[in-house]
Each structure stands twice: as structure tokens, then as C-alpha cells.
Length: 111
Image (cartoon, rainbow, N blue to C red; front, side, top):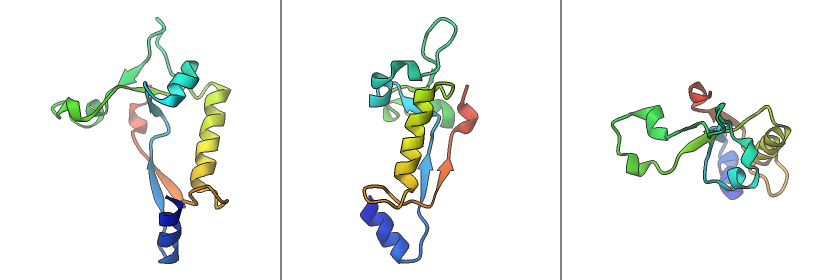
């Protein structure tokens, strides 16, 4: 990915990443490694949504995949994780993507 970013920058382009920092797959490595990172309701159940609910209730749900949970930004571990993700995406350091910015999406869907 960095090679692509460098190539685009070399052509005078900006690289903007489409990003949803609020949701994460309920089956992701992050959800498995920090299970308390997800927003839960009063009964302790994960608050989830399917992407088809964000787009069109009539779409083919088999194309969407599993449920998405919401990250709980009240937790320091979540904030630190997201800082590391943003640093990786925007930093010009070797091993990072050196993107120029983000398009945040699905923010209207957060609990």
C-alpha cells in the first residue's frame, strides 16, 4: 500500500482513505483481543448493526458479512488503539502509509 501512496504522491495526487473509526467487525482480531472494547447495552449484549441497515434494508444480506459492533471510546485501550491506527495511516515514517487524510463514514450510525 505504501508503494501505491508514494506513486500517487509522485504524480501530484493526494491520498484520502475511506475510514469508519466507530465500527469494527464483531469477529475481528480487535474484538477478540480486547472484548471489552465494544459498546454493550444494559444487559451486556453487544450493540451491533449490519452494513445493509446503513445502506438499504432490501439489499442482498448475504453479500454484507457478519455484524459490526461499535468501539467504546470511553476506554483508554480503544483510544490508544485508534491513535496507533491513525499514526500508521498518516505518518510518513517507513512502514506507514503516508496518506493525506480520511473520509470518515457511517458516523450517523453510532450509538
